[in-house]
Image 1 (cartoon, rainbow, N blue to C red):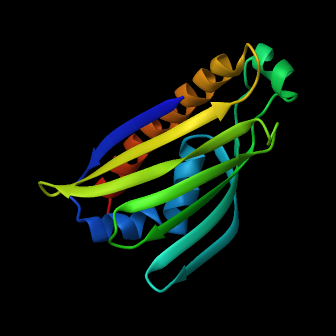
Image 2: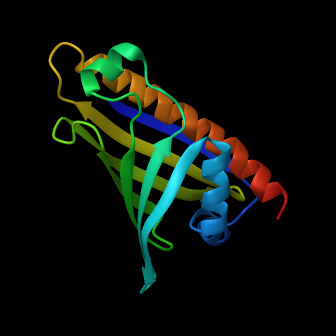
Length: 163
């Protein structure tokens, strides 16, 4: 199931937004605000690029029917991102802790400047390969992801207003 979530931030330049968006203190605070446990696994910044791997555990239960199918009450995952500063294009992949061979999540984050603002568009596709219930699980995950990005956008706007 494909999804897109778009948010505007500002006034801020792309370079300033990148500095905040990839700052560890910001990311720790952001994850706390959207109820995600977060463990930094790797963070490499070199040659104008960042590569980051983070283990994430949402602090919420999945619906009982989905938990039964997936074999667990919580979805935990490892997010890997790659970004070249100034490019405006971040690629991301997610490796789920449950049914890793049945769940595929990947996409991009597009950053652009418009009228003194930064527009962040998150585009992705989540595929759950389970007979009969894959679509239901995909919808649950996509709805949760979009809601988390909406909440993260509000936190980010507040963070920017205080800088």
